[in-house]
Length: 337
Image (tube, rainbow, N blue to C red; front, side):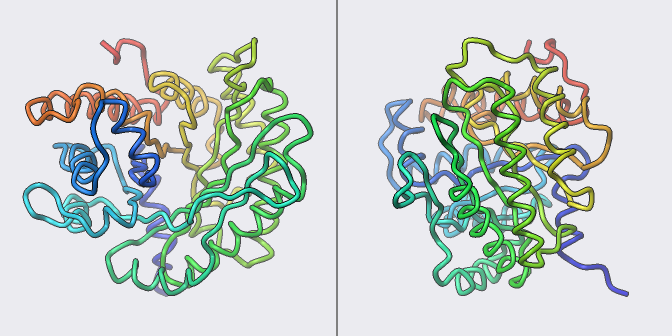
């Protein structure tokens, strides 16, 4: 009996302590990134930004797949090789972000719902033909006074499940991302409560939509104190709380879990990943799916200058190696030297 290709791809994504590079920033977010180095955002400068990371020598040693923005799927590296083909040549799986971003949830102040289900099946067909083999959909859950509401969580979970079912029907592994935002004054216990509830509702919806969990990846927030919380949890506390949450909410048959960095500083995200991996009893394969935590430090080295590309790529590979080590529970502070 032939093995299910979705199962094989999902397994490959979280194999050998490798992770996903989230290079799928929207035009708005990419503009903010480039503005931080006083660089104008245009299709060409965004291409150069992607090129900086995707052409780095050795990226395939730590990255199993790259989540692309649809603009990037149609662009090429500086040597003229299409980015999708470049990744394939390196043995890296191309993926695609398919949601259309968040919008205010009517009648629920301070809460968002993700859009983009319209004609998604048609877009999946085009992305598959273009070489994508996995996809990603992000929902956001905000912790605040009186929120999140059950309705907001359910609305986003329902959309995530519909997306995941459509993705698998098109032959793409869904990366389901219900991000519990780090913004706020909430403490670790409140983060654990909300993240647990969110994931329980998400997996209930995935089951209702008959989504194959062996061909599904969860992209999750860590259970972490809010940025403005006066008491910040230690990496060990974050690791233990995160695994407690997953034990209550995440089915064992899920293909794997990748973590978003979600506003954490680069080294902080690495330290916390290391702690979560150490706390995991081996129930699920765990990995990372970082954007800013991998790209932020090299971006500051690059400054948009061609002569800085080698140094920036060296910094990128350094961050990548640190996270691969953390993904094995073997990260040490000496790796930052």
